[in-house]
Length: 505
Length: 133
Image (cartoon, rainbow over all chains, first blue to last red; front, side, top):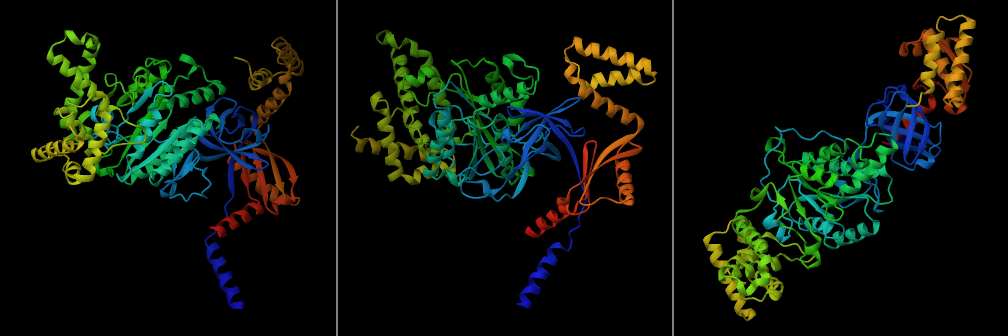
């Protein structure tokens, strides 16, 4: 026993051998007023903007962030339950800005904007702590976007391609499938070495539960983190959620990895910021938003980037979501975010209710990165796809005069109808780029012209299943080579012809 | 924009800086008339506190609270005073002494916006945290 006792004593001595107690000097103030998640604090004369504060309560400390530095007081937002804080309570300045835990330990977890776990799977082991607010990488550190981020959605990968490091806005009215596009993109990143982060801002917790179940069933949680600030969370948590998610992504960016972040949605984020700003008595501007609401989103989205090789070569691709009211893309927040992002995917109610889902309006949607974010094989078919789709949209108005049109116009209309049938895609069913190239190539080379319009979806599905089962080598060659060589095109022709024989066409 | 207690106190302080007693009384009467007409009589207590702060600052007085487990000797208070004067703009310290056995030993000095924690309880919890690491 004495040997064990000596060992224990030695261990303790070793641990405290270099312990040097220092007097702690704290800057303190006291609470003047607290309500609705905002506290007015007297004192704290030397506190700095966005500095973390600690509010002393009977049950411990509650964090807050100083956002208003006034002559006689400091306005702070509270990140915990403000009802525990009493008037006159001690407030300490921490000398730090808001940080979140980051690292591998966050993958597969559901956390709140402070990095605290919400999924009941135990404490999170953080590799580091990153500041929530950070200046975006400079011009010199970046390079042009040149690698595709495949969403698995045919209409997007063909006509509005997204690259790694791009910001592509998903915009539309409620219940048109904005989140569905984002989730399908996350599902399609399986095996593609992309870390995904889904930031839910002000969403219904029931909706998030459904999304989590889907991600788990598809095995997507192996590479995804969910940052949740639900509809019942206080406004400060909604405000910090996207920045916290971005900080978690920047950890992987610094390691040279590719990250995809979905912000769902920034409209609710702007509303939460408006709530905080009005409670802090900041002067309201247009639509009662504070004057810096543009900066709110620009500094967030500028942190999405593609870094050059000297800085690790990693990327953060951002998919912000904005909800419009009655299709009004010219409203304040939508126009702000449209001007910040590198393109938008516009979802239209008319298309949705006609059965075209995803309801992407190809005319109003754009990707400013364009074909730089496509493999050569897709580039070859996509250019013609875009042209066919544009021509069809122009001619569609004349469809009612079917008998008065020339042959060429009729052919274009028929081709366009089949194209829009091909664009229809079920939810949670992303396609690989090889299958997409096969389908588009078949369509453009007239192999679907003899298939009835209402049978196109079944035909296409069967063609893909046939190719996957019997011609996996050719499909793999499209992905590995990235190009549609003459040899591959001959193979595709043979595959389609063999399939049609077996399909009975 | 509503006038704060600090502004009222500052105005009163500046007006009465070199005033005689009758002049000071007149200034106070005028202040109260102003408070009455602005419906700000409830700020009177805050104005007194702010006025005292301004007065202390002009005289170089720092009001500090020292919390200790046992009453402190004059030497210990002198040391604490030099610590406070080194960190503040003051020339003398007026102490409010508080006894709290929970701090075990040492002292906690609170002055202006700062707290210097020299308590034994803080060092013990620091040591415990280091052992846990």
